[in-house]
Length: 454
Image (cartoon, rainbow, N blue to C red; front, side, top):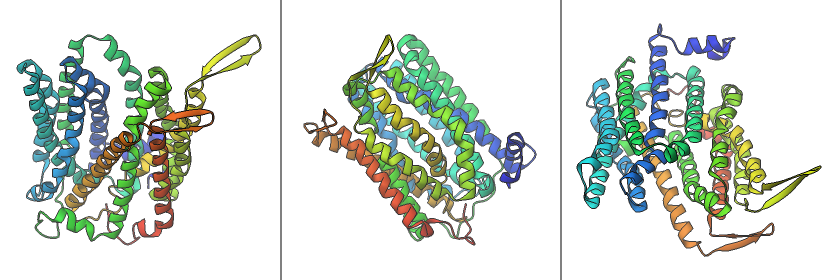
């Protein structure tokens, strides 16, 4: 067991080395994770928006292009029938991942140089984005069923903690740099960065070919309906998927609206906002081992629920952030400080601490009640629920914001306009519902001791 190893360095060497085939697979997966996190950040978010703005894509076009991958993810229904035709899928998945990078990174970058008409360009970008997302759907489902084979329960918490740690560091650094890079670097650099990303994607594909692959147990020849019917018969897996859906819903129903609200209405500066996000990385470094040990001593579900007990009430408090200033008298020195600074710090700093716990725990929800057989159907079903939760949250947030744009209420001496503060609080309410589901029904969620699962 990893927990029995005394020093952090020896633990790392035990989990990641080239002597044991499974440990070698985890090395490749960790390298892939580092590169993939980097690729996601330099080809999406502010970098992607800036790239589209260079070629005059308007806000509607940006919204459509950001929505396309979610739409393509619904075609995950077809992946089990396709993947189960291949007892070994190493090369199929590599080709799909390569085509994803080729189309989504290099292809989208080349299109504006080939097509001048805006409407034609946007239509082609949508088509290329949709096709590349389909290849990524196949690759994601296939790699999920493959990679879990060298992440047994005794090392999974450690591996997922390391992956989350690297994500926190990379995202934090890029978040601090992103605004400055987009504002100060020439357009050709943004385009060159995308071609560099394609090169890194090819390197990623090579690393994904290295881990060993064994045959995937399948009870019988899969049918199209298996992606729904097989998971539906597994009650514990379905209960876990309910939590996944609610969690994704709670995250996506308010996030984009809150970002705009904080920057536009409250007057939060981009520098302060980016620093707050960056702080998650140092918090993760400080507390990742604490939460990993809690998972090993208790369970994934307990840690997820207990960490949300910190996050949920603060999420409701987050809705009461308001503009304004206050003066701090320090003897002869008087400091005028925006009111949002202490309020946001009061909310986000404890959330960073607890977020380390619930993020690591949530990363295993795909696998925690996944049986050994028919993993492709379970992995594909997870993608459906994950994306449906995200889509439902986004649509709910858009509709709620539209219906409450004239709404206002007064609290703590300030009149809050629009429904974004209420939407932010609603996220906290949904999180309390998740806590209740987990703590009340935990025995029905925890894997059976004698059950075979991923």
